[in-house]
Image 1 (cartoon, rainbow, N blue to C red):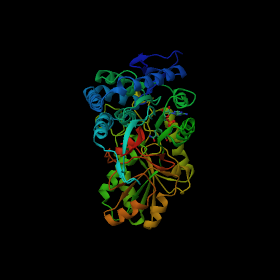
Image 2: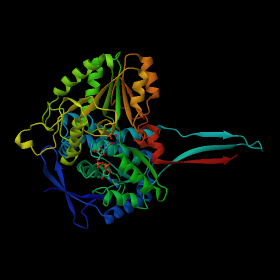
Image 3: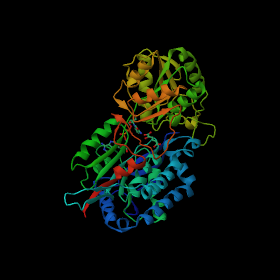
Image 4: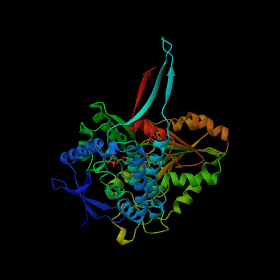
Length: 486
Ligand SMILES: NC(=O)C1=CN([C@@H]2O[C@H](COP(=O)(O)OP(=O)(O)OC[C@H]3O[C@@H](n4cnc5c(N)ncnc54)[C@H](O)[C@@H]3O)[C@@H](O)[C@H]2O)C=CC1
Ligand SMILES: O=C(O)/C=C/C=C(\O)C(=O)O
């Protein structure tokens, strides 16, 4: 059986404890690899290697050399595209048609975009007057923050891990990555690409394991890590924030959401259906930006519900290699338990199940997989947990509204504030509503249209800080002002 090891100081190494855990293919429930579980020793070795590399060749490299190497990392991912694709789809079960358009290309782009950005974004300077009339000149310079702890989730494993590692390395930091225990493979494979691209040993380190009382917690408790970037559940974000408080380490947190889609009667209905379909069901609903609450203006409510039902029933459920499949399994049987508990709760709370609500019948070779039906509900009270909790499955609840004010109030009614999608052809209304939604990311007549230069992150309990564009540079560098008296 294949073993997945840590990548520390440029070498693949096993755990001193000899502890291994299973890496399971969620499409059929079969074990595909054994993964080494990191303990404090491995985390400590990785952090030490990262710290040494800061002082070594990486820290001494010119910006030109560093960014050329990061371009080679991106090229290396693209050259091994099929290998990354296969690995990502085995770990997650997601359709290859999806991962080949989103996950793997973005994994490569995350290195190129931030390598180019750090070379081109200027810093500030201010001339000032002084009492002696000679004046002074202030100018800011960026310096790497140091060793960054990267804790990444399982829903878009390569995409979200490199979304952090790309800018961190571009800014001259070194990293220790703790990928999700569910999806370790592409993070491990990236070590080979780093080596081939000429990234010095110790710059990119990976320690596998779980969160609490395992590699994740040991990393956040390690005093020699200078900052943490995390994507995942809000509760985990709180735990990481507490750990980072010791030693006053910086954090960037991209957390849960329960995102609202607002469909106005003046929308282009074809676009609204297509966009809501993607936002509710893409990646089997396992996207933090996804729409789990849909509010539809009453006059088009029945039409919208009918058309979304028809579209959801047209989804093809299947394994990664099925070229026609557009809905894979959930990431694990454990996660399916969580999603199915909400499917049951919806029924208990009096929902009308418009479509789905259960487990699809799959051929015998896939019967052990984490499959669920895409599901739509109407008729739930606003305080049902199905409407207030992040489910992270292929499902949404649709509720009518009567006025713009009511739609805005409903959208803002939860403690989350990650993303929202507004569907209206009245551009004045769209701007007006967008300005009032309490969320970090608003799409108008689109969803998941991503420009990597834009600020990305959540408000309220959906996150702390922004990454993307210059905001990534802000987080991954220390800005220093130098004031020169003339
Ligand atoms: N992209 C997102 O916004 C994601 C949201 N979620 C949400 O979270 C729910 C639970 O899924 P999980 O995989 O358990 O999410 P999680 O937030 O616990 O896991 C994400 C990462 O954090 C690590 N982690 C967990 N506890 C930690 C700790 N105490 N210290 C350091 N690292 C820790 C995990 O090992 C993993 O690498 C999902 O059902 C979904 O609702 C999960 C994954 C991604
Ligand atoms: O950076 C992106 O384009 C996608 C981000 C998605 C998430 O952060 C998520 O699903 O957690």
